[in-house]
Image (cartoon, rainbow, N blue to C red; front, side, top):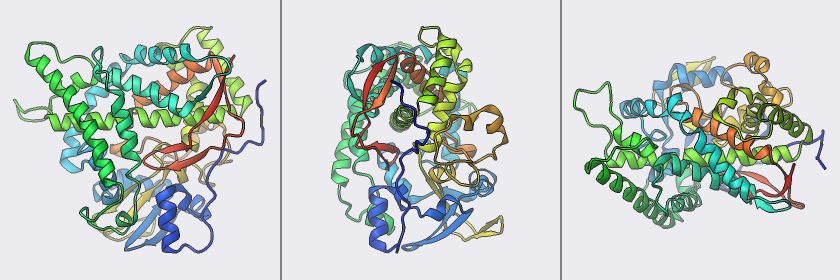
Length: 459
C-alpha cells in the first residue's frame, strides 16, 4: 500500500512566540537554533536584533544575501562564534580559514573536485549503496538517518583512502558525532566570553578530537612513508591532497603540510558525509509521506534504469530524482544557517550595517520565505522543475552557500545523493515506523531527532 497524503505538511518547530527574555532565548538556541525564530522571520526582508552584547542583522532578502556573500564579500568575515564551534574539530580548513590563506587553500583544492575527478568516484558511490541494499530485507526496521550516515561514511572513507582504508576509519565518524554533541553554543559563547572561560562538555570534545586525530595522523604518516619508499601518492582524496601544489605560488613552493592535510580530511569527514547523509534522511522521510511524489520517482527510475543499478552516465537523465533531493534540501537544509561579521560600515537596499554587526544568512528561513515560495511549507519537487528554477531569484536557494565560498564539494555531494537515492528507491520504499515522532534539530547540521525509524518494503 502506498501512502498518499495530499494534506501532508512536513514537520518543523513552531516559531517562538511571546516574550523573548534572555533565559528563554539561550535555552532555545542551545537546544534547537531554528526554534528561536519568530513567525515574522519567515516573511520579512531583514530584521535587526540586539542579542546580548551583539547587534545582529538577519539578511532575508536575495539582494541582501548577494551583497554580503558575493558583491562585498571582503567586508564580511566568519563569525567568531561559529569559529569557536568549528575550529577545534576542523582546524584551519576551507570552512574556517579567511583571507589569503583561504584563497590559497581554495586554489589547491579546486583540481581535486574537478568534474573528471568526481566522476571517478561514481562506481564507488553506487557500489557502497548496493552493499547496503543487499543487507536490507522486507519488513526490516531500520534507522534511515543512521543508515545514511553509515553509507556516506563508507563512501567518503573509501574515496579518501582508496583500497587501503584502515579498519578504524569508522571511528572518525563516531568521534565526529561525539564532538558534535559537545559543541552546541552555551551561555559563554552567546555572551562572547573568551575561549579560556570554562565551558561544560569541553573535556569530552577534546577527548573525541584526540581520538580522531590519532587515526587521521596515522593515515597521513603511513601514506607519507609509502610515498617516500617510491609508491605513488594515489588517486584517492588523501593522495590528491598530498600531491597538491599551488600553481600560482613561486617555483618550488611546497604544497600542504601534515596539519593542513589533517584539517582538510576532518572537513571532508564532516562536510563530505554528514551533510549528504542528513539531506538523504530527510528525503526518505518526505517520500514516506507523499505517495504521489514516490510514484513519479519510481516511474522515472523504471524508465531510465530498466531494473539495473544507476551509473554516472544516468545522472543527466535522473531529472526528477535530483528535483526530489533539491526539494528535501529546501525544506531541511543540512547547513541551516551561517553568519558573518561586518569589518566596516556598509549600506545596501537602504539598510545601514554598522561595523561589528553580525549578519545571519539562514537557508532554513530563506527556503521557507513566504514571498519566494508559493507554498513554502509543502513538499513539492516541482519547485525545481527547470522553468520554475530559472524564474526564481538567485540567492533564494542556498543549500551549499553562495558566492566565492560556495561549497567546493557541491558536485560530489549532489552526484552522491542522486546515485544513493536512485539505487535504493528502485528496489525499496520506506515507511515511517508507527508512532515515530521526528523533529528537525539544528546543531552543526539539521538532523532528524531522535532518529528516523522506518520499515523496509520491497517494491
